[in-house]
Image (cartoon, rainbow over all chains, first blue to last red; front, top):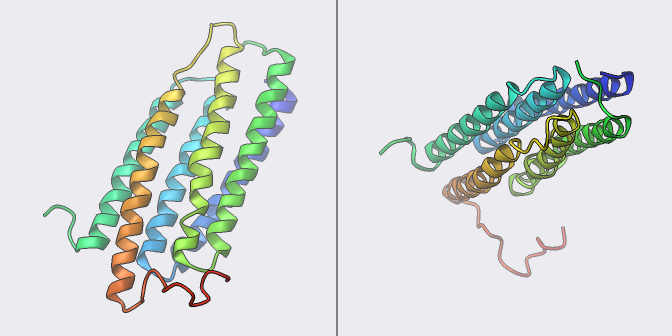
Length: 92
Length: 117
């Protein structure tokens, strides 16, 4: 790992952390419930991207499975929450 | 640890920093846009453009180690491009339903000045 790539990965992770902090602010502040669901979905996506960057950082392909699982769980969670907002219950 | 080709490292570094900028832009849009239906547009930037850039970076990185072309990261792009529109549609319908329940006239009638905001 050269110095250039190391610095670039650090900068990228710092930018992701900043974005996740802003998303967390929207989760706490969000005027309505759907704003909070949207922000949580955004946090899932950014966490997945951070996992892919960590795969490059540690030069390991094990992180892909984790990223894939994060995509799937984020999808299921967001759809369940949206369904709850729509109907008042998840499984009818 | 294998050493990468110098050009591949430069490409990977540029792509990663660009994805960080795109994700930060999406977060700022999520924070600053005034209405929920406008805010829905911002996170799509992270789940499409940024995900594509990071996938490209990881393909370049893992392919330039000499083990042949490594394409399995495309799986994440495929799954994401199936799930992200579904989430957006379901959430938009839920938000529309809740706003109408709360008494908003949505979508706003034509010519009411909402389009030139």
